Length: 277
Picture 1 (cartoon, one colour):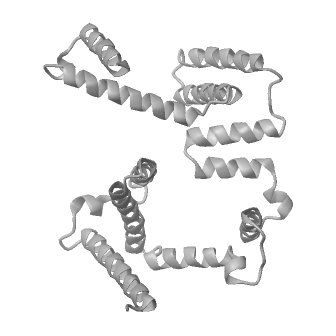
Picture 2 (cartoon, helix red, strand yellow; picture 1 turned 120 degrees about the horizontal axis):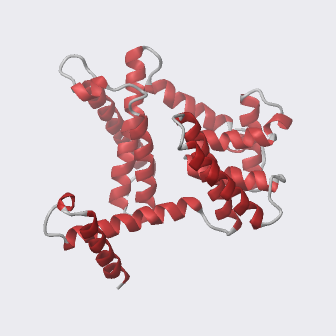
């Protein structure tokens, strides 16, 4: 009969071997002596889009419940962590060791009910302790941590813009920043739409961006009033657009770029009809 402890130890060693191999491969890619030109050209800033992209692809894989896809996408995301750490090490900032040690210490510190003597009754108490410890780490008093602006800033810092706006809208409304009726929201929408249109008549790109943001935020508030999820709505539209485009390509006898706008519209309507069936 196999020893469970021995089996677990072997698993740990296998994991460490795999991680060490990944670290070695990334180090080789970044080596000035025979490394990859693309990897050598990267900076922490140039890799930001890839970090975001890989995180989204992990989420998509998890939702699909495709285990092979989850393994692959988690690997791609792990690569971004190791690559960021390798670049930082090349610059003399920090290493993957410090990243791993930092998160380990944080987990131990924020779970005193597991690694200390604190007793908790449920997950809600765990969350409350987590927030309290987190505030203490940042030098915040409990009162500061409860400020609405601090909570909203956390959403803005940690979530994609559309999701952050939805969260901010909900929290602000609960705090009293709310219209009396949905008519007020629609009035605000028309006001912001007018201001956006007016901004497009200027050459001030920053002003145009600002007005576009105001308009989008108002649309998110409209969605909240009707119990709709703006992120899911946009994700659904993206999916439908891609499906229709894919169907159009099946109907087409040449590249879509060779079609006129009128021909593309006919293909689009044909694709919509096909997908509805």
